[in-house]
Structure formats: C-alpha cells, structure tokens
Amino acid sequence: MSLLMEQLNESVAYIQQQIGAAVAPQIGIVLGSGLGNFKNELHVQVSIPYENIPHFPVSTVKGHHGQLLLAEVSGKQVLVMAGRFHFYEGYTPQQVAYPIRVMKLLGIHTLLLSNAAGGVNPAFQVGDVMIIKDHISFFTPNPLIGKNEEALGTRFPDMSEPYSKAIIAKAEAIAQELGIHVHKGVYTGVTGPTFETRAEYQLIKAIGGDVVGMSTVQENIVAVHAGMQVFAVSIITDLGIREEENVITHEEVLQAAKDAEPKLTAIFKRLIAEL
Ligand code: HPA
Image (tube, rainbow, N blue to C red; front, side):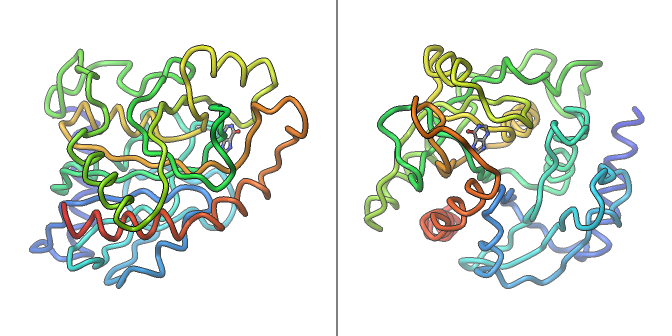
C-alpha cells in the first residue's frame, strides 16, 4: 500500500474512533471564509480539532485552525469542515485537498463547498450568491500532479461535469421557492494571498470567469477524481472589477460573507434535506 493510502487509513481510523464506527455520514460540507455561522444550524455531536487527526495538515498559523464536526442538520448526519486549508498558507495542493480524500474514505459521496469570492461579472453585486457551474483552475497547481493513486481514481479524470448538474437544478428550484436570487457561473481559482490587480480582474473576466477566489478548485478536483458529486456556492464579497473604488480588504470580505450567509444557510439546509 502507498504511504498516502496508509496515512489516509490512519486518519480515517482515528475519526471513526471518535464518531463511532457505525456512524456513516454521506454528505460532507466545507465552510468558507466568513461562513462559519452555518455551525449554529447544526446539532453538533462530535467535534474533532484538526490538530488531533493523524496526518491532517499541520497549521502554520498560531492558534485555531479548525475542526471536523459530526453533526445533524435537516434530519441527516453530515461531516463538516469548519475551516479549510488554503494554498496561500503554504500547504501543498495535496495537503489542501487531503481532508477531502479522508471524507471520501469515510463514505462521503456528496460534497457541498462554500466560499467567499470576488465578483468579476459586472452584473454581480456584493452579497449576491452564485452557484458554481464550472471552474478555471489553471492558475493554481493541480493537486493530482504526481504519482496517481489508483485506489482513489483514474490518472486522467474527466472534468466535463465538475459540479453536479442534478444538484444544481435542485438548488436552483429551492432558491426560487425561498425567493433567493442566485446567479450561476464560473469560479476562477487563484493562489492569493494578494487580491487581484485591475489588469488581473480584467483578464479573469476576459477568459470567462464570473468570480475569483483562493480556494475550492483543488478540493473539487480531488473530489471529482475520487468519484464524489460536488456542489459549490460563492458569496460575492467584493467587486474588484470596478475601475473605481476597488480597494479590497480582508475585513470587508469577511463582513460581506457574514451578511449574506443566511441565504447560503437557507439553501444548504433545504438542499441537505433533499439529497
Ligand atoms: N479575489 C480573490 N479572492 C477573493 C476575492 C477576490 O476579489 N474576494 C474574496 N476572495
């Protein structure tokens, strides 16, 4: 067995020990920047600090890094990553996506991702919600570079449906019923940690991006490789594409994500019930 599979198995065994081997959540959720309030909607049963999980990426930042939660929401058991790993923090793409592989081996087949993103489509406003229908990942290293782990997936994965069309359709219907306006568009992954220059926002718009952000694509690729269904939503937190007033701060991004979060929470709750 490869070192990676050995490590994954050890992570999985530890988590199963904490949550109980008989418990088998099938839905995984990753909460993005400023979107941690979704936790309030959960009945948390078990909370595991990332640093306790064997082989989980070790935080370079002092203090908290996040927790893996076993929780109940909408009558379903879910596994929630409250806090994710970003490439700009210095993790390798493989480390960024490691927890997704752990989720897969725990039996998760559907992954819900959320993130805060910059609006590049001129029709978007701060606080809008965008369902990700596709992505551009060329600006960040692909997490599948290196020896392929055949036990997880194929060498050359098809990426024609990186985000499940069936789940997107469900989510659109739910949003409409709830009276929440949603866009549907293309997420462009970048490394960060700098926000984009004006020229870069223009480039991203020109190549077909609707939003830009520093997460999600590497997690998506590893999930698709492993045969998981993925659904992802961006909250638009800033509009760098505007020629005027495009000074962007992290505080502004977090605040905008927090303000718009109830929309995301409402959609996720209903969607989980229907998955
Ligand atoms: N660019 C990149 N990442 C982001 C942005 C942005 O404008 N907003 C939130 N995350």
